[in-house]
Length: 414
Ligand code: PLP
Image 1: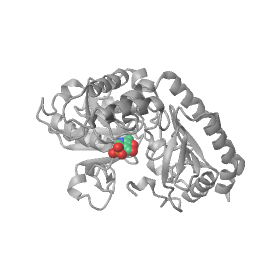
Image 2: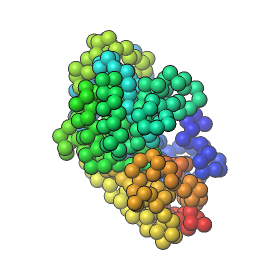
Image 3: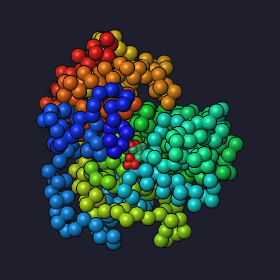
Image 4: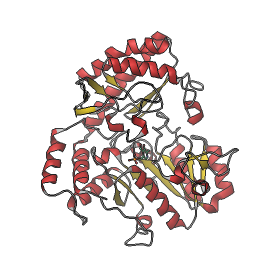
């Protein structure tokens, strides 16, 4: 097991070993087929083994796999990203973890400050400083979220409850001149989908600006997935603000290890070699990965997002209906094309933050998960994840999901 989210610890049972994937379907080593509602945890926006992406990748591989020198696909992919997201410059890395780690280093280097603010339940990869849990009492510095992270790595991190403006105001009042940046998932998907309340991201951007801190919007999951322009397309583009720095991954790598951070030119120009803030990577901007990402984004048209919206709506409505009939308390939440179903009544019918998400009935989800798996649907093996669809989730795939839902809902109720 090379990444713990793939394990079945939270739901019990044995993970399936996958032999191949095509379109919306996974095939395991025993020959069983599943409709894939994980999509590699987000990247496979077009579905698996998309013929056009495969063809571009095969051509790229024939030209060699890594040069350690600049290439055209890097520039073209950066331009494609900048055409969708408000970034003046882009730097490629190989994972979302590297993107957020580099973004906070750059924020610290640019501002000359040391404190980083994050929200409980937002995951930004396994960066030491961001694997942090709230200390006891509000506005205390964080404690390590896992063994192996020294206290010194999290003692400059502040962890706040999501969607809580008062908490943000309090820490900025107390630590303003020390805060280098506030980093947030543009819309959290790693505690299940918890959309920012109306105007929350704008409030964060304005609060950071007022105090000379940078606003870092992590769109590794939502980027080019929640909408054509990511979460920013749903709020910043409409309300007229932009983050100082953004991070991307998943979809923009087309199923290969590629990620990026980018943003204001005056901030990005502080990066080496132009500026003094060091950041580097042997495989950064790898020609195969950038070719796959470029092909994926070029094929991710408005029609793709409209299709994802429709398929998501059909599944959300049917799942909610099945759970209601079976008497299972649940909350359905979405942001753009991303959604998840919480097995909890929520608080006032909603899940606003990590504490609310933590009321989830994991045992009910485990029963639901296994009934879906037995019926040929591969859901995330954790109750705290988004369900991912692709352009390849056609009527046959969606019908397989719909047919499985009533039995799974009854299993959850048992
Ligand atoms: N940021 C967000 C919002 C993520 O969802 C993830 C991964 O799930 C990461 C960062 C880390 O990305 P990676 O797993 O590529 O290191």
